[in-house]
Image (tube, rainbow, N blue to C red; front, side):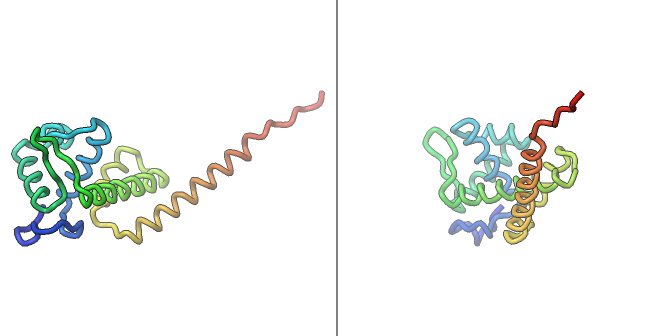
Length: 153
């Protein structure tokens, strides 16, 4: 998650894949449920409670999370920014893979792996490419909504 030296001061560059996955999971759970507890993360990610405890501790020490007295987990500002960036990468990759004809389940799994290694420049270019394709689809659909001519009898 974070090395011992890296635990002082939050920086998205210091996170590994697992850390990003935990932050993204917490973001999704906050959006869905409003509040997040460790057990929610266990259920969503299918990992053990001790694994979540270690991850939460490291992410708290790294400045990405906070926890209140009722054990509710919240993203800090840098934690939210990082989680949202990972989530956006996932969304763009998923859209692009589906547009290429990849099965949605496979596309989701592949996007989960790819989101951790792809550069911001690549994501920006992929997003622009997919959005251009969507715009063309919308224009094409609008053209196709014209009522067909009636044949004269």
